[in-house]
Image (cartoon, rainbow, N blue to C red; front, side, top):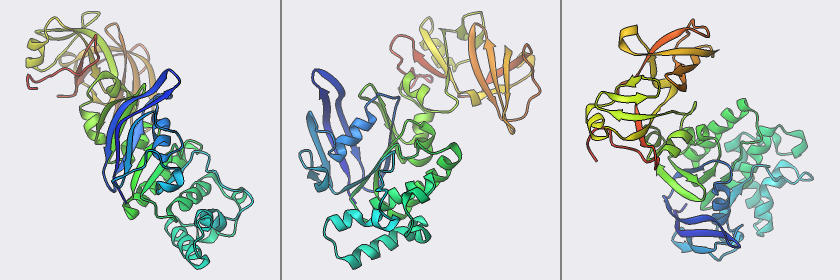
Length: 359
């Protein structure tokens, strides 16, 4: 396997820039997810690594070799697409072995490699079937098998689970992660689903409008997002954002409600217009004198937990209570944020603010 390096990679369509000078190093054997909203450039970036899109500026190296100007077939990569891209007139075995056959590999080697891949993916009993005889999950495993038989330096996945139903996506998520752990293969995985990225990746690259907002391990991005965009994108349900102002007493919302913030931050940012971020699961119910009042507007029982839409001062927030709760619209609950769970962002720039008086 090999590392992937991007140096000042840009992509222009005429005068329109869609990728703006991205620098990124993906380590040998690492699983990196590219995430971001639709149109952020994640699939374009993946296609440039694959050689399916020319690079307007910058260089791409795979395994220390400059592949910027090489055709896809010469980059030693394998790509798994969203739509499987299987040949309908070929059996599973023929689909999986096609790339090796196209490269003129001996028949015995093709058979051996296909059987090896089928064993890893649980496809041994399906090798004689055609794509039309397979479920969506089975087709996706065939597409993955076609990629791994080549033993490439880098695997590229372009939203491979988006065509599957929710239950099957969870199953396939585990299978792809298990496959990576078996093969120790360098993997670049594009998804719009941040839950996929959080559960599968070693590191996540958050993209926005063709620029990298933050790169880091999943929990690092979750616990310490560098700006409001990353904070709102990572986590499900999404983080609540409440506009207000820092005071020596804490964070003051419109409507007179004050949330406690660490004393150094209250003093350091006093008078500053800020946005307070708190994740739904970081609210906890408490006694009337210990928290702030919030009026229930919608109750969504989820079995082992309860999701509440609330009015907190003049703000609308979501709270996810890790328990069943007997609440009804119109009820007033008292909530407090868990210790250390608040995030502050500058209202103008969206950048994270220091809470502890330490850079």
